[in-house]
Length: 555
Image (tube, rainbow, N blue to C red; front, side):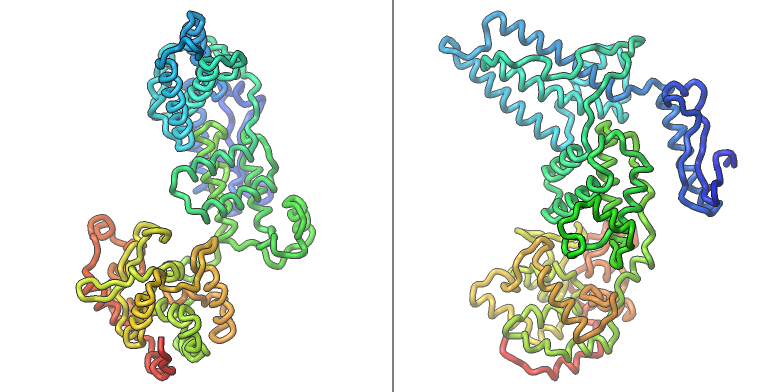
């Protein structure tokens, strides 16, 4: 890799490349491109250099290949639909299509068809589906004498602009057929001038797309897809409020690496839970940022929270690239390193910790708040996640092949982390010995649907209130170690089984993780419940005798 692509300034490395002479007119007087590689290490700089050089050379090639910009694409689409509406107006001038006493049912049918078509087009736009207008996009290109790769980014932008144009034109046509004289072709397009080979127009002034509007469009499309849970939408909107608050409601086209880097730097200093802290109450986000510039807050956002903001902003920018709003994903590479590996984020409980847990006044809740007694034991002996356990229904406790199991599924209002989280987990014989099934049968006799009727659904699921309670109980009676939490019970489950020699693929099946083997992941359809039961029965935490000493209250 040539060294002349690197520049060292003040110990920091930068990528630099001279703009070829034939491309200088496209870069408004700039003679070279530079970008900070955010490292002082030469080897790291060399590694980052390769990807930056590849992307830059690709950009140069696209420009030389006659890449159309978004303004030109919009002009093509505008010209097509202007002609289409002119033809429609000529038909109306012949006396057909306007509602009145002399019209037959044909016009009404046409209006109904247009209304239905408009609804379908709007839904396609929200979902990013362009199949319905692909033939129109092809006709636009053919009429202008332009060829375009149907797999290219430009073609996708063309299809999206064509879909927008079709929606606007349909609205105009509907209004005209109803006799609305205000309907005009100009509402369907910003500029009717066409683009033809060898006659590329000068860039026209385009109405800016505000960041807040683009973010709202992103949220609307993804929410309409049905893949987002309410919590996902709420968290994403919170991320975007912070983004707009820090960088401002700028034109999306103004976003660049410098602006996103500054956003990341502000996040590093931004206080966690700022809406709940008296010092920031009533303050705007820019005011809070200014306050953190003066005095570093003692409780900033965690690295994982910062990365969540960067990743979700990056997802928006990828979407914005496909729609021609921005040229690149400027959030790429801005996530920060987390301290420690993922497996070190939660420590498992020691035997002494577990003894303190079961020796705490936990048993006193067995009658009054049974979830507080049973959920820690279920977490320890099933390895299930807290929300998976908190949302269980009575019908999820079932027998398969003579083995009592928890059926973890997404039926009704239940949600799981991912597809592989759907699974059955055998109920350990020790839990049955303690009377878990007696508790279940008691609820069935009372015709109660949910396993923990006292738990109510909150923004984060049925586990929100219990999680807060357990956190306080854990700190009071068990441990003050920050990394030992309810999720640590899952770590105890996994570690104990692996130490007992249980195959890691079986352990992955029990805890709802993708296994490490591609063969298993793709082709293995699940272990028999007998194998899973035999694996679970390997659990022994050296606290069982102490639990047996607990008072046996009637469930």
